Image 1 (cartoon, protein in one colour):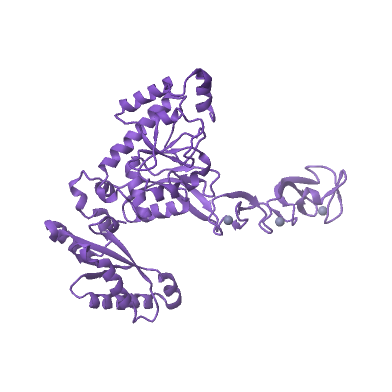
Image 2 (image 1 turned 45 degrees about the vertical axis):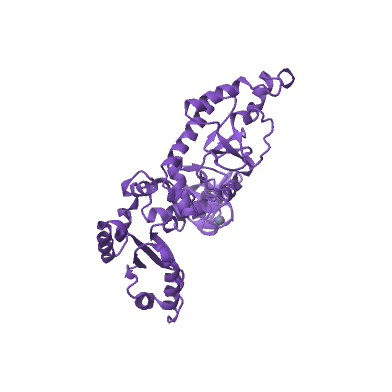
Length: 465
Ligand SMILES: [Zn+2]
Ligand SMILES: [Zn+2]
Ligand SMILES: [Zn+2]
């Protein structure tokens, strides 16, 4: 497959027989596919090489441009696909598909395009038109995503597909997500979004995980319960009737004879002197025998050993946009300005009531901003001071904060964290004001809780997750 793009063309159109300016019939057929899908000649940004080798026909099928309105990324080599994310990020190209013309399979690509395969032209056209249609539906608030979480939501929306793990033995996690080369951070972002009701989880697979380096590349084996060596071999047991000695056959074996290691009698007749009641596992390292070997895992990345009863489990999910996320992301819905109901159940009851009240109003009166306060040092304080102290510190902080905020905004507490509700739009930079108020409120505490702010709801794009 690797060079079929080129070889097909080189075979059917020898360079010297055809003037450079004359288009190849394949180009015309591709162009007619674009037209069937109502596409213009796709404007593409080439990555990583802007010089596409042997690309004179590809350059007729796609229009390679440097900037402006871009329909797709043309992946010209699969080798640098890991830094594709940086390229997309720098160029703001998260909402267009990646078309792989490298001729090699690449997990980062949405679709493979091959000049020799008319089927791939149709697939590419279909992918491009799906992205285009979804981009048109995407609310303007998400058109230039800035945070990783918003980027993920917007990407899932325009791709029109679920966030599905792809099996990848080269990855220490054994899976990757398309479009996100850092599996650990993509998983973390998706989990946080799922916890907040923006994504829905579907179980994909269960892995065992190394606690040392988080890798899923563990080998599992039966091993000696005494020394953990997997070098076990099966040995027949011999039972000497007259003295009741029971041990592996090797202990009786003297050349061709069987001599009892306990009473030194020779065993001659199977069934009369002795029998073989079963077998055991004999450890080649410490020579212990066991009838119940233990299960152990060995990390292939860092070499850490962990017993079967202590190994950590890592469940992996595919994710789909929740109904509420779809409503919020699409600009064609009347509900776009409603607070997502799925999130409500995480909030303190009194706050839920207040939000329902605000939502029933109309016009600017219905605007509000909801900020979650999380504590960066929660675990440390919990460890050093205990839960009772943490609770009273939080209570003190919340009271102080409410004191500083006065009538401007209200503080609500759940068992886990605090919430601040600000009625109105963030025109006067409420978040900056809140940050200052929070620092002030924290200054009287004996320990630092390191509060961080997460805007759950507001009227601007950065107010989203
Ligand atoms: Zn004996
Ligand atoms: Zn052993
Ligand atoms: Zn490890």
